[in-house]
Image 1 (spheres, rainbow, N blue to C red):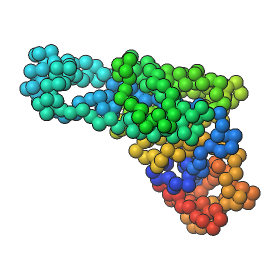
Image 2: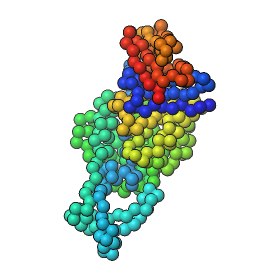
Image 3: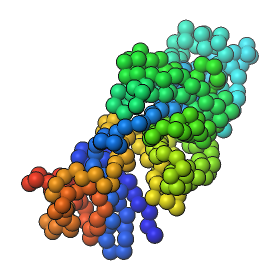
Image 4: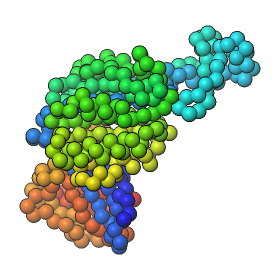
Length: 340
């Protein structure tokens, strides 16, 4: 069976939350959700969290790395003085300057501190979840992949107002990690908020996960517990930042077959996100009616599906394999969605 492909968020019309396409013989199977925050009872009882990758490769993104180039001759000088050392980080060899080396390189204009690009984006995530979804009005923030890559350092719970001055520059008590283990962070939230009616947890990362198989096994178990009614729903969203993200891994989690109808993971690439509403792309009630009447049309203008008694928030339909787009018609208004 062919795998479903999720369209990049920046190619999805603003009316849709998510669009997935899967070849089925001579047809395309299309599934979309309607862009909307949780509604009614589905908006109640949420606990929320934001987990920030603190593996060594994130130091630059947190503004904790010097950018620039120290000339080879000067670097050799630093090594002789013990101001530069070589060590392994995230499986790669890297040269690190000691405090005297950093101070000298900055003073001489060879390097400067990197820009903290994580903090403003993380503040947006935390503020949005705390102000729009969290039952207590406070979203939990942690750093993950600390130390040996398995450490989790809690930062605290923050309201939307507190986010305005929230400083996020990486772990304070632990060091940046030598690997990127996601499972401990997932376990942290699912254990701490085990009694919550619903959980929404965002995991921000810039690279490749070291424990994908372990996360898959845990997710299958979690999905089966939810399906059996032994625990409440959980939605996890993996958000990739930077140019080194392994989207193949993210898609593996997003498309993981748990043997149930429970879909735990979604994934987004930060640079492709249209807005914060994108994190709710898969958090929809399939039975919720969002329009009294609607129709779906193929490129020839043929109606391929009609909703005479109401259109739900999640829809699946089929088109000819060659179809390059479809249109959704609601109350004489049409929205065109490209498929390629």
